[in-house]
Length: 312
Image 1 (cartoon, rainbow, N blue to C red):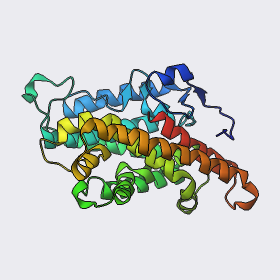
Image 2 (cartoon, rainbow, N blue to C red; image 1 turned 120 degrees about the vertical axis):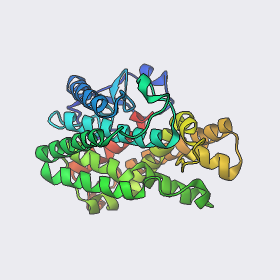
Image 3 (cartoon, one colour; image 1 turned 45 degrees about the vertical axis):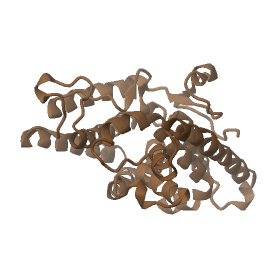
Image 4 (cartoon, rainbow, N blue to C red; image 1 turned 90 degrees about the horizontal axis):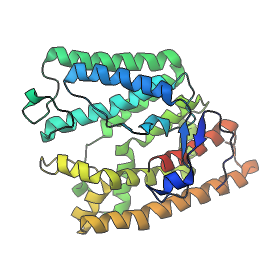
């Protein structure tokens, strides 16, 4: 699959570096604006620790924020608010999970007695709400139209996330469809529109679904493979609804954890990645027959694929 766009805001990660951690056949790109993203991370981490009493780095690594990899072509005026949004998104989820599971977090202060709860008093909760309000306001100030679309999709995601358990699904296809929604597929797609400043509507996204869906599904499953161990430690003891495809195969199919991960990598994720490449090539080769074939559509579809590879 050959990219159709000129990359301005990102650089290619060397294949040798990628091969050390994953087997994806897609290119991986990283934003050129790590310095701006790092500034946003430092600001968020300081405010978050003041609000809840412990540090959080779940949405970032030694390579920087996940925002640098998806979408890598994020415009420079949006990288800071977007980085803060993603870090807040993970931190909020972490706080909810921790309060349910009662497990120890990294860099926990001694006065938490080995566990984490939600913010310790109303004053702390007000700080969390203030952080959220500041992030949402900044998103809107940069781009009101696309920022509103992004926040609307986040509201829809909140209504779906963690609402069902693996026992509710008798077929793999039904579970995979739910898992994609539960992971925030709509939210992720509107992130591309916001960060890249694209002129696409929700209807456009839905019309392009046959092209991008395999990549989105593969991304959800990839996340499940690599996050399972941590999620299992937190959520299995508390009997919470763990939305994870590894867990589905263990509970509903009876596979051991190692076999479940292997099956996902070899029999689910790689075929989906291959299908996405084929879908993209077919769509682009029939440009004259596609009503939606604008430069923004091409950028959108490229970013979907880079979101899959960057998720590794």
